[in-house]
Image 1 (cartoon, one colour):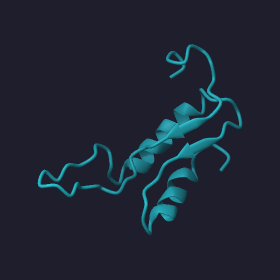
Image 2 (cartoon, rainbow, N blue to C red; image 1 turned 60 degrees about the horizontal axis):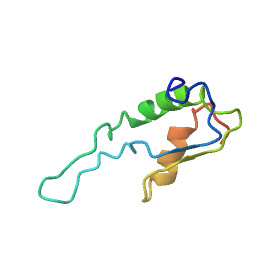
Image 3 (cartoon, helix red, strand yellow; image 1 turned 135 degrees about the horizontal axis):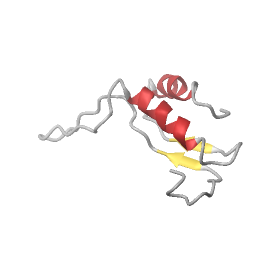
Image 4 (cartoon, rainbow, N blue to C red; image 1 turned 30 degrees about the horizontal axis):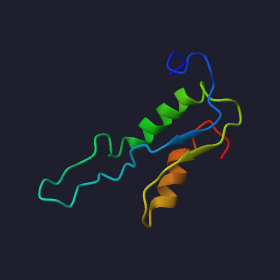
Length: 86
């Protein structure tokens, strides 16, 4: 990441990671999204551990999440261990 941003630090973060909901498309092909399973929370945590090294301290972040009844519980469980202020 640091090489990609050439030593700069980001002022904010916007991300749309896998949601961990085992999505299956509604077409006859029943397409799925890679890494959108129960391991998504660990993937998101690992990504945020890396990203925090290339954003300014106190950088705001927006992390998209799934819609539906479990969205708040899933979002809270996914972001609570992230080393950012929530």
